[in-house]
Amino acid sequence: MIGISKLYCGAVEAADVLRYDGESARLPSHLLQFSRDKRPVVVWNVTRRCNLRCVHCYAGSKNIHYRDELTTAEGKALIRDLSEFGSPVVLLSGGEPLMRKDLPELAQYAVDRGMRVVISTNGTLITEKTADIYRKIGLSYVGVSLDGMKETHDRFRGVEGAFESALRGIRVCRDAGIKVGIRFTMNRTNVADIPAVFDLFEEEDIPRACFYHLVYTGRGSKLMEQGLTHEEARKVVDLIMDRTGDLFRRGKPKEVLTVDNHADGPYVYLRLLREDPERADEVLRLLRMNRGNNSGVGIGCVSWDGEVYADQFWRTKSFGNVRRRPFSEIWLDTSDDLMAKLKDKKSHVKGRCARCRWLDVCAGNFRARAEAATGDPWAPDPACYLTDEEIAQGSL
Image (cartoon, rainbow, N blue to C red):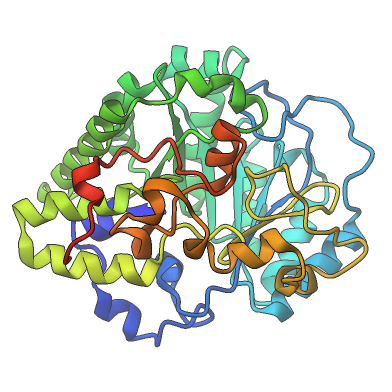
């Protein structure tokens, strides 16, 4: 995650992180990406079932019953292991997680063990009753997918009325006092909606928005040709910075992030180097704390069937199953060659990644995207839009 509001607008300073000694157990949620210990935030796909038909779904979900999902008891065993391991956050995702009837029980179990619990949802099943349940549980955050305005979103999600239902879910969470935000997956078919989404973001007083770069996995692999060109990616990141900066200047600060393309970090720094060199130095310190892509280190995934992956998008390689071994044991086992290399991925990336001056702050970007595009997990990430001149070695 690249915090545009944190980095470009100065909502976070390096001193904010150091005040908590950089330990994930002590850091507030908005500073977790800068933790020193990097215990993994774990995405648990609690179900594969979903009531929508999203064109970019990494899980390839359908509205059917899947027989191999972890039981309530197995889910609690997973949560217990994660809490003892020191994972600060469990993100309950899907499919559509609210289709799992024991989700409140699982969320409460995690909160009771000191974990921060986040739900990633399409928002269509959130009601006043649902929101009240999760408010009482003490949910940390609800991220609702909104991939454009009405026509665009409904087409993207494959169901007419999905936009209105998602917006209603956002409003219900907001009014219940639960921190809620927008999750927007960017591609050529919806980036034109970003200005209108920013308008909605402000009008509805939504505190957070995350703009995701497309990762080629699941049904999203069919959208590879709809991924942004390098020039389009630069323009959209500039737009996000411009709109976020405008909110801050008008006294309406919001938390805005881009996700799944760590080239955004150096790009923000290079722009600030032209606009505000003093702030740029601070941003470089924060980027070094963040350390770039953390697949296999600071982010992990447990699938609905218990398989453990380096992140929620990288489904070609499982490192084990929590039904047979605890997640904590699987995560620290470097006898697997890929897991060992992920712990030190900067030593294994190839091509322009290997000679990039931003390697320490990007860590080679998304390995899942590199593998999907080239067949080689250590090849350069094709979504890196930095020019050869911008990545050339030299003093920072």
